[in-house]
Length: 146
Image (cartoon, rainbow, N blue to C red; front, side, top):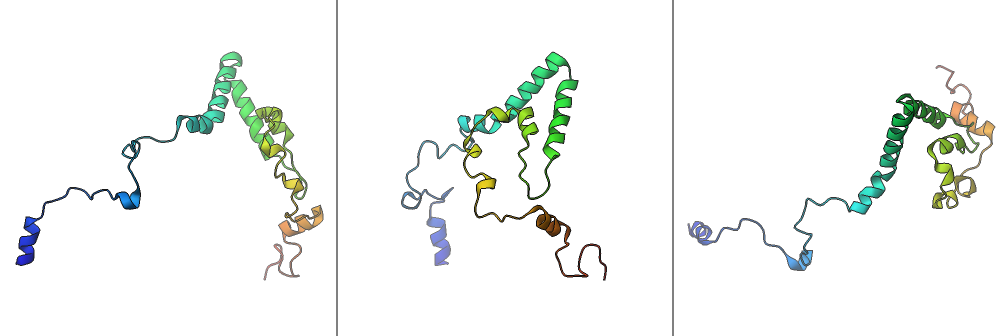
């Protein structure tokens, strides 16, 4: 009974008080939750897609709707083309179509896969044997059934 009387004497609190010692001082932005990313970050994230959309709209207005569709099909074809396994693929045609051939960023000269020493080097025959499963024990290849 005494504990019930204590509960009725306490003042009700609608929310837990803010703990400055654990969470630090509140700033002006801490109470605002509707803010998303910074506007510059949004521009950097959406920039290439917006540029491509504007270029396709300009091409459609100038040459007709078939031109952007034709360029999309060509980009899909060029992105699927690869060399044999073990050989480096530069995808020069795709870079020309997208305009990336004119850009020179840090990825052009830093950490190139063909210059890495930790990557395993294999000749064409060993890579194809691994891919097709021909280097396994006899009787356990993809064509053999048990």
